[in-house]
Length: 289
Image (tube, rainbow, N blue to C red; front, side):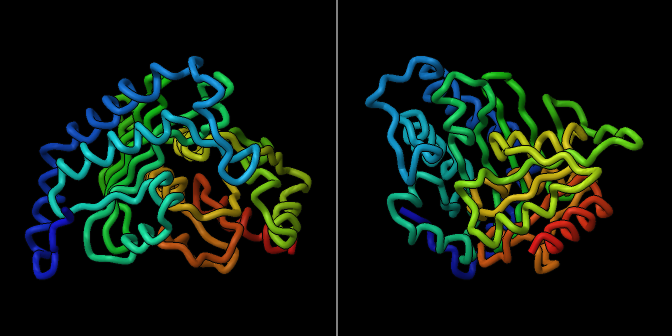
């Protein structure tokens, strides 16, 4: 049962503050346990009947996705009374669940296996994404690349820890091409394709993206300069956007507005390592249109 949070603003704020200051390790442990129980035992072990297409050959779901999301839904809501979960697989079954992003309750935004296509093909380039948000603001996020045992934890205003150590962005090599990961063509409209073609210019090296969560982590590390994406599923972006902003980066849509996890964004949008790169990428996307 979802707790009625009406009139309990101070109580919820206290619970969130307690979780993110004294008990944040419990969230990390919950993410690790879900991956250990439901994801990694099935890595390179999936049977054909355990993989299903949702909206085409590049949009897959596996038994690991579903069971890991169920595991996280139970453990995360137990950690924060009054919270709800918006998970990729639950929303696929019932799109009305997305309405929680507009409500007052704290929301766990969950992508149990980000990079399912890679997971299915035995590629370690997948991760589990969890973000805690309230009223459209992402408060904390966890990006866990289980096959690499790499965990990035971001807290709004508190920076990023990568495997327990503060993450600072590596400097960009002088004179190098701008490295940008972009949406797969299957997930773009004709207008968005034209915008993304604006990145095919001198001094820019666009490439198709892999796991969105790991691309955001690459931006936070300084291994990638920017992403340019044309879809807005909150579970793909919430965790990574906080990683990028907490390491000095930013994000904008082609309308010049920050990306909103609740949706309704002008697309495509970019998240990049610094404000100058954000403006450069947005300028090129607008030029493509």
